[in-house]
Image (tube, rainbow, N blue to C red; front, side, top):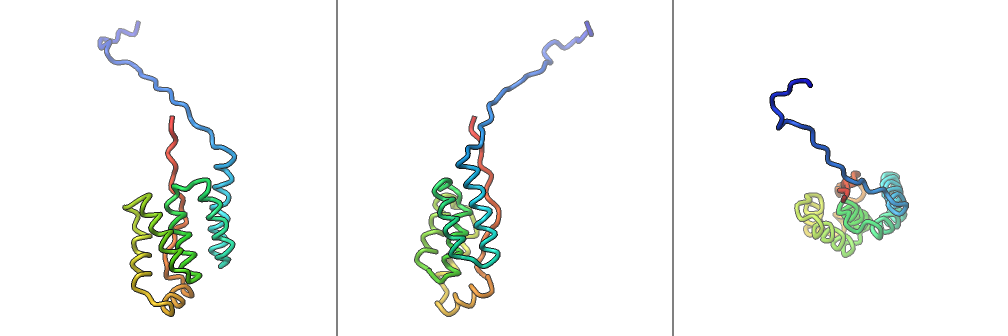
Length: 135
């Protein structure tokens, strides 16, 4: 009726289902935020507990692994810090923070690590990676 001379032009609609966030995932997000707040306030042991609970639900969260490693480093537990940084890199080999933190730990004495912990020179990240929704 409109006299469209180009009949090959049309509208295409693609429908995808959006996955709902489960109660467990909501709980994990809350745990992550609580861990960040505890870290900011200097409650490292409590923050570690929150991150560990979060990582039981989202073990692929490489940022949380880096943050957990940072907390262990701040508590002078190099062995656990190394494990966490390596885990973060095994999930995302291109993630820079755990690479930097590993280099820092490898070349740092315990006394220097204490000083770094005091001034928060070990890097941690406050953003959770966006999870891609599967259709």
